Image (cartoon, rainbow, N blue to C red; front, side):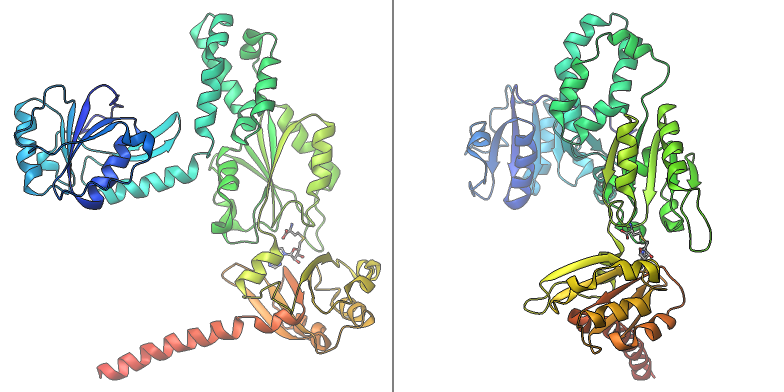
Length: 478
Ligand code: SAH
C-alpha cells in the first residue's frame, strides 16, 4: 500500500483550497459533502462557487496570497487547477508539516482523494495509489452497481437499535451474530426494500435477542426473480444482486446459459421448468422444494424467464410462500413482449395508431379457442401473443372472427435479445407461414399496425451499409 485509506473529520479546522474554475468547484463540493470548513483562494478571482446556502456558511473566501497567508489552525491544503501556485503551495505545506494534495500530481501530494461511493452512513473509498484515477472510477461504478441503494439506511437502522441491543446482549461475539442474522434475514431485506416500519416492528418483536442470535439455523427466504428474455445485460441490478447472494437457484429451462453464468459459482442450480414435449417436475413439487430449502435456512432464488408475473405462475408461487409463512420478495424482469419490441424496434404504442396493448397467451389451439377474441376488435390495439407458435392458425382464425383485416401487419419474433434472434414479418393472412419460417422458439407474435415500423429491414440495411463502407474504403486505398 502506498497510501493508507482513512476517514478524516474536517469539521474542526479550515481546509485551505486553492485553485480555479470547475476543478476548484468540484473539489469544493467533495469537501462540503464531508461537512468541511473551507477557506477558498480562487486564483482566477471567480468567486461564483455555486454552493447551497447551508454549505456556503462553512466557506470563507480569502483574498490574500496563499503563499504568504497565515496558515495557523489549518488542517490540510488542497490545490485543484492552481498551476504553479499549487506546486509552490505544496512545498510550503510540507515545510509546515501540513497534509497537502495537488490534484493529478502525485509528486507534490502527501495525500490523495479516493473515488467515493457515498450512501449516507456507508462510504466506500477506492484508490489506485494515485496511478490511475480512471481505473478507480471504473471500480467505483462496479461497486455502485452492487451496493444496494439503501445500504446507508441499513447502517442507520442498526445504529438506532445498537444501544438497546448492547444492553440486552452482553457478549460481543453473540451481539455480532445477532446483527449478522438481522442483516442477512427478512429484517435486512425489508430495510433495503424501503419498508422501514415493517423492519422496526420485526426487530422490536424479537423478545429474546440472545436466543435469536444463538439459533443455529439462519432464516431462509425466497426471491422470485425475473431473468428477462435472454440478454444477461438486461438483468436488473436487483436481480444480479439476488443471483450473487443465493445459496440455491431453481430456474426455468428458458433462462439462457449466459444468465446462469451470472450466478455465484458455488451456488446450487436446479432446473425445474418444463419444455414443450418434456415434463418438468410440476408446480406443486417446485413450491414444495422452494419452501423446504427456505425452511432449512437457505437464500433461495426462483429464477424465471421474462417477468415472474407475466405468464410465469409467479402468483401461484407467492400464494404458496405466503401460506407457508416464508419471507419472500419479487424482483421484476423484462417480459419477452417488451424485449422483442425493443429488439426489433416495434413501438407497442404509437400516436393515433395504437393506443392500447393486450398481452395474451395461446398455448395450444384449445387455449386459443378459449380466448374471447371479441375483445380484440379495436384496430388501435396492439396484441402480443405468448406461447402462440403452434396455435398460430387458431390465433389467425380468432382475430379474423374479431373483424381484423387479413392485411393487419404481424411479426413473429424468436429468441429475442439473444445473439441468434430472428424475425418473420408479414400480414395476418400469412401468420402460419411466418411461423414456419422461424427456426425454433421461444417466440412471441406481435399483431397490429405498429409492426409496420419494425426495424429489421433497417438493421439489415445498416449491416449492408457498413460492409459497403468498408469495401469502399478498401477500393479507395487501392
Ligand atoms: N414470464 C415470461 C413468459 C413465459 S411464457 C415473460 O415474461 O417473458 C413462455 C413464452 O414466453 C414463450 O412461449 C414465448 O412466447 C415467450 N418468450 C420467452 N422468452 C422469449 C424470447 N427470448 N423470445 C421470444 N419469446 C419469448
